[in-house]
Length: 548
Ligand code: F6P
Image 1 (cartoon, rainbow, N blue to C red):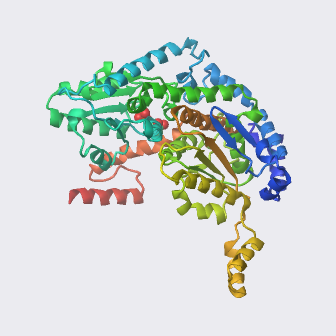
Image 2: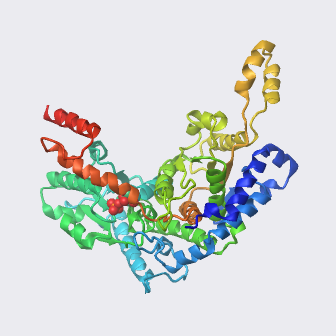
Image 3: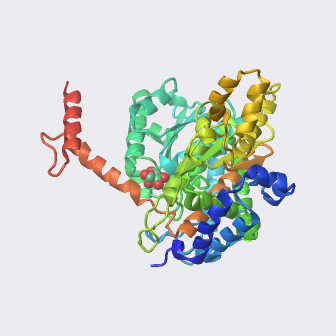
């Protein structure tokens, strides 16, 4: 077994952390006026200032050595070549092909995949144009006013995040909604007020067997038939996005109304495929293709740029620096853009489902932390909820700020204040406030000496808290595509260094399996043998509640 943690690059970084931990970021800035320029990158419409990290040039050199030791170059080539890098599922990972607007050749088992991708893209264009221009009508001849996408996980989070991010590009006569939770509230509350005659359902599921999605889809079909009283209506009100044609047909959706994708598209990497159909419906196919173009720009950057100038590689290694050497467990994502409100949730799946693994590709247990806990919400709201802990708590929480320089809304003074707040948070995290500074401020405020002595410790900010500032001009479809692809590749690079399969998700299976058993136990007099006393008691309690 050869774990990356047993190699020389890991040991060098471990030793280096104790040197770095002694440094103060504010001193590093004072000593080097070029620090920001030295630690900034520009690519694909994104500017990444990573100078507010606990790093020196030596740190970056050691981190790059770690990437080399993990054989990153060759893993990237395997990904591009269509090798089965998802080894536990025996699958290639080709989501880059979905946005391949250049002439790179992508193959799966020796077969070119681009013709199939182009053909689905053109069907998506024809369909989304028809719906948007009122050529695709409901069963009673009325125009579609609402699209309800039913899916969960990777079949929902990406399109939902992107539709919200691109809300300024949406028309208000065609609303797009997302239902994922099996909790009836989600479907019922979404359908409340919608007209079945003008509602189109997109049932999105790679497998077309996911319990939540199929249950919601069945209830949606009943809701539709209840109002339209004709099975033929399903063909005008239901389309599917899936890899499973037979299951789509068995559900009752005409396979002509199915948009296909392929098993080499991982669920959490699927928004670029037909899973993105709700995005095309919401903002139009031209804009969906701009989104693909932005992601393609980032793919090319990831493939071509030298590691030191390669945004995904640099961000990945910085994450590893804190996760594995600085003892940090989490990563906060704070977009200063209300429309990016679902980005942290979306990235939770991309990152945590990909790298939340405890064994390497070979099945050996790792002896280091893998994927961090990803969390966050938009600023400035975040400042008024959990930022206290990031500033003055005991934990080290690396933070990514995402900042658009221009808003889609020109409303006197708002954007200046938003940007000022974002910059101030990053600055405060980096600089902190020393005891002397805290004391001086209190003295200037005429606070008496006894009270100052009591308050100083509470008003000290340790600073030295790392952050990246990802700046974009404005959140356009192209910029959004590049931003998402940046995180996808970052996660890939981290998975390579940790030696895990970032493309499987066995951890979600056990719960699904047990839910099936428990569901059956609700209808039995006694629980199945072997059920623990806690679960059995909860099952009994639920049975009693439904019997009342
Ligand atoms: O439960 C996790 C998961 O398997 C994800 O990986 C996937 O994105 C999601 O469920 C939905 O699966 P499907 O698209 O097959 O319904």
